[in-house]
Length: 231
Image (cartoon, rainbow, N blue to C red; front, top):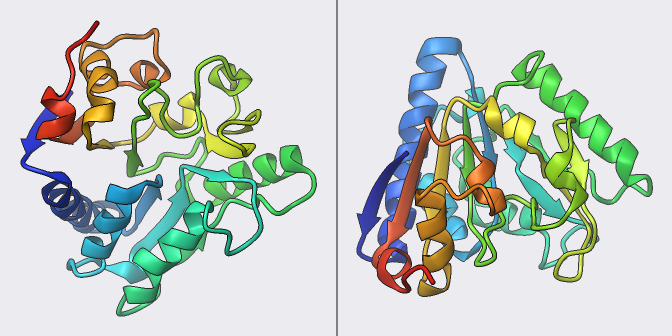
């Protein structure tokens, strides 16, 4: 796992956008397409705003979601709401595909299975994402793989979680994350410092520590890197 420490969240967002754009150009040159999965969060929304200004072959890019809250379309808690505002509304041309998690369907298990099929139709069998952007919770969760949830042991590529912070969710699972060609962690703020230290130490007692780290780049600000020591 490689790590870069940047001065603040704005610098992390800018650097993350550049990393994604470069990965997109490389993937299109090598394989003719770029398959990206993104997570939510305040710094990632700035990252996506910056990404909209980068040189990216959008007509060869497929966008997937790492996770999504079960809430109505347009709800402020939905990652898709912010993805539209931060990135899609700012692009010079539409991506080849925007694959939103179908959290409005009444049968969430069927919705998860359907999203897994969409992954396979775009990214192969089994699906291989070119880059997955992940965040890190203060409790050590990533995606919507939270401590104690049954989704931690899912063998399918997409799972339904139990309630967490007021919402059930759809989430990519460890098998889907394991196959990704690259993992990009974006971690900012002193509240994440202990979890970040555990991630960097490979602590498998937290969900984030179960993500493979040999293909990972961590972009963190000074506050997250130094804000709090391990207990």
